[in-house]
Structures are given as structure tokens and as C-alpha cells.
Image (cartoon, rainbow, N blue to C red; front, side, top):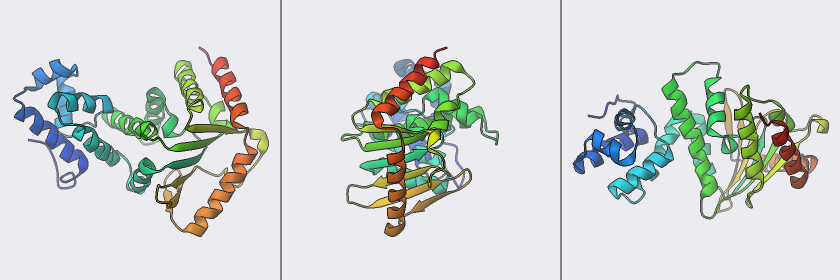
Length: 273
């Protein structure tokens, strides 16, 4: 039986766990046989079926192929990973996944650009200690967000990075070099624009914290302000317009995309272990 409590029952994560168990048993497979077929640890697969762990996308893709479920498990996983985020963030996440245009101003490396190792470092450095399993689930959820960049068609994304983001390295030189390399590669994508706001630009209207602006296919727009302990989803058109104008001024102050790319490339070279 899938382990659950009254809070878990009915959640997407619980539904996914139940479906994983049902599919395996209906196919007549033991956990040992399934582990041999898809090359994942038996204990790990058991913990997915009990809802103790949140999988990563490649595992769900492998299971979809094995059971012939046509992407059902990937879709359930997409819903289940939202359970790893706080309530205040879930609605924003759902909107972000559907947005056709995404503009961000970041004072830390944004989740859409993080490598798995860097995400693990950040999450394990949180002031509130969490278990290794929780860290791995949160890493999977954070990296899973990046699937929106591989949609067809993908969203148009513009990210303004405060220079301080690129000047504050992770302690592990290889992790930091790989993270900078990831940002450099993202800047070359045809639907991604990355600009650096130099420290020399001084204090700007938006430099107090992260901002996301999203536009949907139907023309709806939302803004999301994120703090250390709180987040605010803004849907009032007049207020969104004020943030959009502030973002435009920040964009005009930042280095051009070409100069930003050259700046990041130099940091990549300088960071080689």
C-alpha cells in the first residue's frame, strides 16, 4: 500500500505514487525486475511508489516507455513537483510554465539557469536544516522547472542579472565554473536574452529584490515579487504596468546583450579550476 496521511491523500504526488505502484503490479513486474529493466535502484523505485521521494524527469520518461503510458507519468510528475514548493509560489509556477514571454530581474542565480550541483549547494546551505532526501526532492523540483524552456514553441525569456550574482562564487570552484558555463550557454539560445546590470550603474528602482513579469498567450500579464520569506503575485494591470516600466529602465541601464555575453565569457575563463 502507498503510505499516506490525510494531508497527502488526493495530492498530485500521492496520485503519482499510486499510479506507479498500480502500473508495475498490473504489468506483473517485481521491483527487482523493473530496476533491472530501467537501470535504477530498487530501493529508489520503491520510495517513488510510496511517495517518499520525488523523481527526476528522466526516470518518469523511462517508466512511460516501459509501461507504454504515452507521457502520462511525465504529466503527473509535472503536477507532483509543485508540491515541493510553498503555497505562495505554486500559482506563480503554474503561470510561468504557460507564459509566452518571461522577463526577470535576479539578485541570485535564478532557478531557470541553475545547474543541478549549484542548486544542491544552494538548497543545502539554507538556514533551516532539511534532510538529504528533502534536498534531493527540492533539487529535482527546481531543475524540473527548466522544462518550460524546452517547450514547443519555447517562451521568449529575458533575464537581467545583477553583477553581484556573477561575482559571488560557490566555494567549490568546479561547481561555480560549471554554473557560469551554463549561464554563458543560455545566453546563446535564440529565445533567451541575458543582460548584466553592472555595479557601476548604482542603485536602481528595482535593485531591492527579484522580479518576474509574465505574459500569457491570451494577453494576460502578472508580476511576481519574491523576498526571503514572502512572495507577492500582482495581477492589477496598472501596478503591473508600473513594474514593466521600471524593468524597461533597468534593461536600458544594463550592459547590452552582446557586451553582457562577453562579460560572462571572461568570467568563465577566469573561473577555470
